[in-house]
Amino acid sequence: MSASSASESPCRLQVALGSRSYPIHIGPGLLGDPQWLTPHLAGRQVMIVTNETVAPLYLERCRAALSEDLEVRELVLPDGEATKSLEQVSRIWDALLEAGFNRRCTLVALGGGVIGDMVGFAAACYQRGVAFVQVPTTLLAQVDSSVGGKTGVNHPLGKNMIGAFWQPRAVLVDTDTLATLPERELSAGLAEVIKYGLIRDAGFLAWLETAIPSLRALDATSLTQAIERSCAIKADIVAADETEQGVRALLNLGHTFGHAIEAHQGYGAWLHGEAVGAGMAMAAEFSARLGWLSMADVERVREIIAAAGLPLAAPAGMTVDDFLARMRLDKKNVDSRLRLVLLHALGDACIHDDAPPESLAAFLEDYPRQA
Ligand SMILES: NC(=O)c1ccc[n+]([C@@H]2O[C@H](COP(=O)([O-])OP(=O)(O)OC[C@H]3O[C@@H](n4cnc5c(N)ncnc54)[C@H](O)[C@@H]3O)[C@@H](O)[C@H]2O)c1
Ligand SMILES: O=C(O)C(=O)C[C@@H](O)[C@H](O)[C@H](O)COP(=O)(O)O
Ligand SMILES: [Zn+2]
Image 1 (cartoon, rainbow, N blue to C red):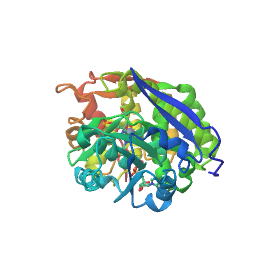
Image 2: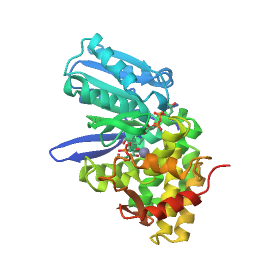
Image 3: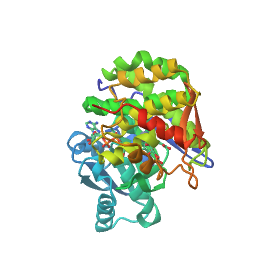
Image 4: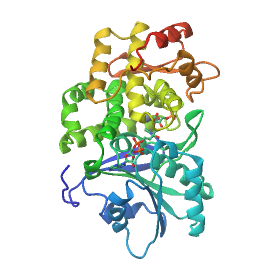
């Protein structure tokens, strides 16, 4: 993407949560410009937390947006989904205490969803809760993880099992950062973009069917359109149901299967977006088995997932029991009833806890595995 003037006015969305709200700013050149970050600082103590891949690319630019009179610290964590752990979150708490940071400090999460989820959780717990700002640098984080306040870490037995709902003060999406994103990570981000079309917006899905090549080619206009529409849908759903008592669970389309794949394969072997891509193909096909979706619609789902460069088949060797054991731990489940997000049409998702267990087991048995 081309860098443009930071004075260009970015898109501004709002996440409205009862009496509170926070902005999502989307545009090029936000990172190095003080006008976006400074208004959201709680006090003078600021800690930028990033990782070893993002630091050499963007830490200096982010640091430059903070004036000299602030007390700024930096913490660079290791990279990777396997590091999304309590151990790394503890390092954030250690650094905050060693710096003598108090309740008026602000954490800045500079990076992808792994950094955002961990920094948000560190902020939720430090001295019972401090301010944080999301500065997402992957497509996935810009369209999904930076918005909505789900924070946390993985457990060997399941994804995001330890965490808290803790909302950021603001989300600053600098679209210029996508220029350095590896192709595989861009595809992973597209999984969550496609998800929004599938659950809420058939028109957006139809647009994506034609726009996937330009999105994969990093066309700035198409990317900005996709990010804005994705964030608007997510902001709307989170505003309606902040803590996932109902409609927010729709954002989990493909995740019941996807999280099982990620945990079973070992965190990082499959990217989150890849697992969600295959998981959405599985959810579409299971919806068709139960008679809720036509095979023509399933084919459209499979085509767009494949066009985005995402896998369709489940991992080789992952058995029905491997799936079911992980799926039984899913956070959406109520008592012992397994809940799934399924499609009734493209653009219309529903939460189901009534799928016959024997149909699910038979479906998992039949679903194609990678060679
Ligand atoms: N909280 C939520 O609502 C939510 C939503 C979706 C996903 N998630 C979580 O987010 C995580 C996945 O996020 P992700 O896909 O961003 O993964 P990630 O954070 O691991 O980032 C992907 C890779 O890209 C690198 N990177 C980041 N920005 C870059 C840039 N601009 N240029 C080059 N490289 C860059 C990272 O260092 C990493 O290697 C998962 O843990 C998932 O569970 C959370
Ligand atoms: O924001 C949400 O709500 C989501 O479900 C978004 C998902 O894309 C994301 O992967 C989320 O972290 C999954 O949440 P979980 O509660 O299933 O762990
Ligand atoms: Zn997700």
